Structures are given as C-alpha cells and as structure tokens.
Length: 97
Image (cartoon, rainbow, N blue to C red; front, side, top):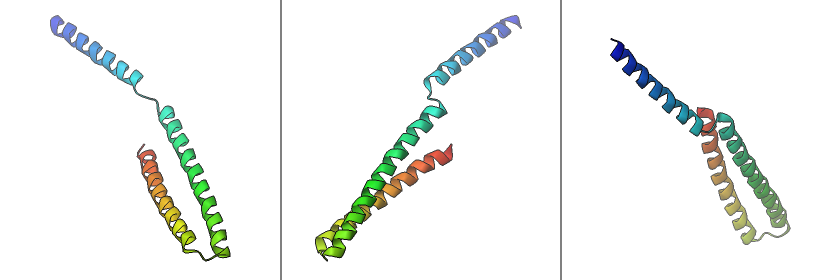
C-alpha cells in the first residue's frame, strides 16, 4: 500500500509540475484583452479614415457627377463591409471568453 501511495504521490507531483509549466507559458487574459483592444483601436482608425474619404468623395461627387467618383465610393463601401466583417469576427472571439 505504501508503494502505491509513493507512486501516486510522484504522479500527482508530475501532473502539478506540468500544469504549473503550462500556466506560466500561457498568456494571461489581460495580455489577450490588451492585444484585442489594440487591434480594435487600429480597426477604428481605419474606419474613421475610410469615413473621411467617403465624405470627401461625396462632397466631390456633389460638385461633379463623375462616374469615377461613384466607382471610388463603391470601392470604399466594399472595404467598409469587409472591415465590419473582420470586426464581427474579432468581437466573436471576445464574446466567447
């Protein structure tokens, strides 16, 4: 019985040591959240830049009814749509935690 207890104690110690190593190697929730916050801030900056471009293009299109301006507006709208999808994916990761 004492041999079994000694063997079990060794195994438990090994498991504890392995779990401790894993905990140390995993990033903390704060690190992950900080990284996500940084990514969201960058995405927000891109959105704001695109919105400014759209406003400029809308003002230009009002001045002249150019089809080139309309095409640029359409392209920027597509970029915003893709950007929104990326943001939705990122927020789904945050929601899962």
